[in-house]
Amino acid sequence: MNLTLYAVNAFLILDSSGKRIFTKYYAPPHLKEGEGGVFNSVKEEKTFEKGLFEKTWKTQNDILTYDGKLVVMLTVMDVIFYIVGGMEENEVMLYECLRSIRDALELLFKYVPDKRTLLENYDQLVIVVDETIDDGVILETEPALIAARVTKGPVSEAQAIVSDFKEMGFMNSFQKAREKITERILKGTF
Image (cartoon, rainbow, N blue to C red; front, top):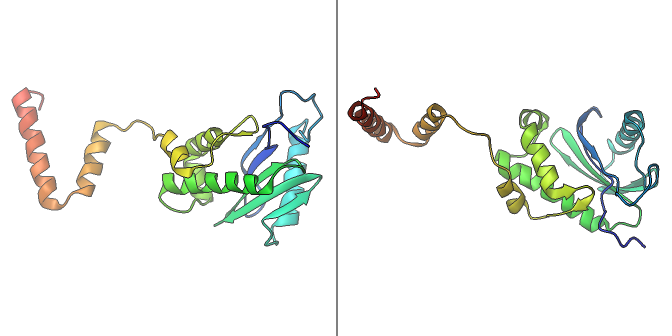
């Protein structure tokens, strides 16, 4: 029986053709190299991913065993999310972790994540995974809390004004612009 907190061996996101979008492999610090299902090279990782994709791309199963590991998968649009754990791990816990990552990404992106969105927002994807799983330990499974910890990059003043105008009606935008211009004229920065 596994009495450690290290539940996750790998987190993978593959596209509909089996190519990597995001992968992260974890090795518990108390195990020696080569133990615990950890791969020693990128070639071994890609071989594992290719075999896993070939086994799962036509299946409707969410939970399966592959290569002596427990694999939980979730298909979303044109990507497949995988979380890999040891055979003794709780599949419900792994599924909840996987679902929370997907839901946190949905909260951040405002819609279901697809390949293009994930690649365009890769920085946020990495932070979401890091806030959920740390060195194989599941830290958080509440999507709202995970999404709240992920912030978007800094926005310039011009971008902020444009987004404010998009959210207002025409008359409100006109009034806001008049106030800003008046304010700048009075400050002498116009």
